[in-house]
Structures are given as C-alpha cells and as structure tokens.
Length: 484
Image 1 (cartoon, rainbow, N blue to C red):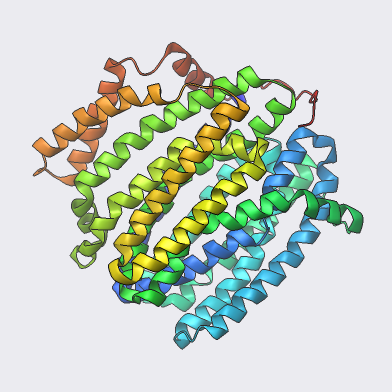
Image 2 (cartoon, helix red, strand yellow; image 1 turned 90 degrees about the horizontal axis):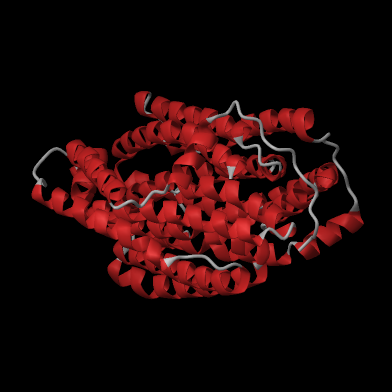
C-alpha cells in the first residue's frame, strides 16, 4: 500500500497543477482557433491518439508485467523491446502518412498531419524506457517529466496564440516533447535501473511477439473511445468536430487521474498475484475502487447541472452547442474512474478475457457511431462513448469478482450517491451564483457529507499519511514465489 500510495501522490502532485495550466491554455487556444479550425486541430490530435494505441501493439503492458515479475531480466527486455519499437514506429508512421495522403484533406491539414507523424515515431521510442521505470514502481521520475512536458506543451500553445500561429506550428509539439522525453528517460533508465544496450535477439523477438498477442489485440480494440473523433469530421463537419474537440478536452484532462491509478496498480497486481498474495490484492482493489467511486459520482452529477456554465466560462458562447455533450463525456470518464482498478487487475491476470470484452465494445462503438453520427452528430458520439464505458465496467467487474478475487462493490456506491444528491440539491438551489462559487461550494458540501456519512475509515487516513511521508523508507523488493 505504501509504494502504491506514494506513486499515486507523486503523479498527482505533478499532474494536477500541470493539467490545470494546460487545460486553461488549451481553452484559450480553442477560442483563438474557432470551431472550424479547432475541428481541424482536433483531427490531428485524433490521429496521434489513435495511432498511439497501435504503435507498440500493446507490448508496453507485457514488458511492465514481465519485468515486474523478474527485475533481473530488465536489460534483456529493454534492449530488445527498444529495437522492436523502432521498427514499429517507422511502420505506423508510414501507415499514418499513407492514410493522410489518401484523405484529400486541405493542404494545411495534410502537412500538419505529416509533421505530427514524425512526433508519433519519436513518442513510440519513449515507451520501452517508461515501461522499465513503471515496472520498478518508481514513478516519481515520470511525474517530474510529465510536468515538464505539460509546460512545454502549454508554452508552445501560448506562443501560437500570442504570435497568431496556425495548426502547422501546433503539429510540432508532439515531436519536440517526445525528443525531450527520449533523452531524459534514456539517461535515467541507464543510470538508475538497468544498462541500456540495443539488442537484436531474433529468437527472443519472436517469443515476445507471441507472448504479446493478447496485449496487441487488447490495445487495438481499446481505440473504441476514440473512433468517433476520427469519423466525425468525415460524417458531419469540421465545425461539429470543433465542438466535440472542445468538450473532449474535459475527458482528456480528467482522464489523467485513472491513468495515475492504473500506472501504480498494474505492476503491483502483476507482482503481488505472482507471489500468491490474493488477500492483499483484494484489499488494494476494493480500497482504490471505493476512492474512484467517491470521485466519479459527484463529477457526473456536477457536470450535468453545470454544463452550460462550464462551456461559456472556458470556451465562450460560440461553443455553447457543445454543452449537451459535455456531461455525457464527463459521465463516461467517471465510469472509467470506477473500473480502472479492476481494469489494472484483469489486464495483468486475464488478458485474453479483457481482449474479448474490449473487442465486443469496439464492435458496438463502431457500428452505433456509423449508424447514429450521420443523423445526430457529436451528441450521439458522446452517448455512445458513455455506453461503451458502461459495457467495459460491467464486463471487467464481473470477471474480476468471480474469476480472480472477491471484493465488495455495489455497497460502496450508497454513501457517495447520498452525498452527491445533497450536493446536487444545493447546486440547483444556488444555480444563479457564480460558477466558481458553485464548484467550490459543491465540493465542500459533498466532502462534508461523505465525512458525516463515515465513508472514509481510519485505514484510509493511515494510507494517506504514509503515502505523503516520503522520508519513510520502502521495503526492498522480494522475489516472486510463482509466475502466473
């Protein structure tokens, strides 16, 4: 618990401030670009995001799992994975470029996408290095680098606004950030964790690719919640994509939190269950699921009640039509909050089952988007995203609960729902007040209600106290007793 809590606190400290700064700069950028150009910029982001799912074929998850189970093999995995990743990066950069050239986009959009594809290649080279750091469960370095990345990103967006730059300039951000990451991560991995030597063990490459098959399929299927951002401008317009890009930033900003929990929990579950520590893993799973329920429930209700005010405050009245999709996407990311602990466990223990569930979600998402987006536009895309996340939550939770470990689940919703209803009534009563007063007041009312309902236990406060005490030394890693 101590290492997990410390990793989460480290990432949260770096990401909360960075996410807030980046979000505020991004909202000003979207206002500067306007709905139509924002839709073009959103298409660039969609390409990079979707191809980022493909570019390592899910191998990062495999390497984290393998190195977590046996850290003495870190150098072997790193050297070979880096070689594989370089070739995969080249291949998918070429595929992206081919699709762009066949897409008949405006010249500026096409050239921006081609520049962004170089950033895709460079980003892919960071994945082996980050996998090693993650497997050693030492995420403080990743936290610091993420903060610097966000500042570089925000700085370049600010330059674009001040000096009236176009999307061609903005398309360079990914490459610049990725080049910085490769240098920093490469130096620290070689110095602190394992020597980096590029290796071409063809037999081992073949074995890795065989092992990686379920992770590869799972990664490919995981694009289900990004398909809409690619097909929306083709089925509707860049303007509608601009609205959707604006509200999707709320997803991207909030999604850092489940990403933080996943980064901390995935290697822990891989290591603890390899040692046969089912009871401890179950306790960790239930604890962090409770925390995420407590975060997800009020977010959804608050977004539903405050959506128009949020849109006008961050993007201006020109983007007010996007309000109808805002709370749906916040609801979808709140569902992701709730199932991210079981997501980390099922991927580490039942990868093939997770692949089947996510494959079904992908089919549902793609078919329904193709049916409903032409008629209902970006609002349909938001509804389908929410339904897709509910499918994932249901499938993953059932499998983990009945096939891996038992843990309490539905009972943990009662007190957060009661507290959220109290908060919601207050927001409705004071709805004419300033947005920031409503957000702050709603958060205070919800927190006090949770405390009054005794949602948090003494154990929860002990975990928090231990996690923020960085002077306390961690126990040394123990060798696994089994290898699942």
